[in-house]
Image 1 (cartoon, rainbow, N blue to C red):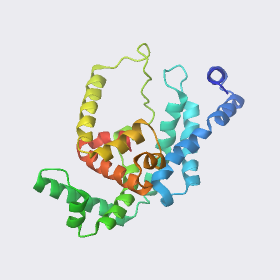
Image 2 (spheres, helix red, strand yellow; image 1 turned 90 degrees about the vertical axis):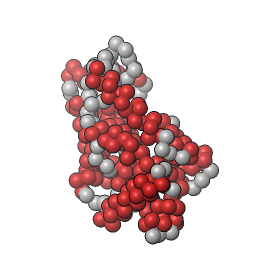
Image 3 (cartoon, rainbow, N blue to C red; image 1 turned 135 degrees about the vertical axis):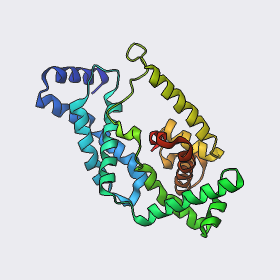
Length: 253
């Protein structure tokens, strides 16, 4: 179905709210659930079954169908993706399935980074962190791969506001309040400062993943390193940015 057809379908549903039209909308947009679940699955890997992620996402998808306002300047795909992602992460948080050992390792890594940076006055290197933890660099690399799980399911204000989707760039559709303008400027400043903490390769991974929306596999081909190494770089970048961005880190996880 083309964009014009979808628009007509939403207009009809807004008027009648008939089960038949609702069913058509569900069938038309159903692939969104697999798309969002697939992206999260790349992080969670063997820890959660892909089919389970799809199942959790369906709840958010149906909720998006029922609550979407086609009169607002927001595409359904954008609105639904946030709802689906939020539903999946909410369910994972409720399950509290992250192993205690991984939580403990995350705390040890954070403590090691703070100790090194306080002493050296600069960003800690992987070698220094491994030495402080008393493990090899290879083992530290394995720890980092496991830490990506905690990055994905981190609690933050942005994900809790899953229903508040920003309007698309349409000057007539939305006017920022003074508070929103200040907040956006603050976020922009913090994000730029956080990116300065990264190495060139880490920054490149963040740009390709979040701005170009490439998969880890695609990024590994571009940077000519293994997919596991890309995963490590991504996790390491988030760890560095977390200290600077605070609650704002939610826009990247």
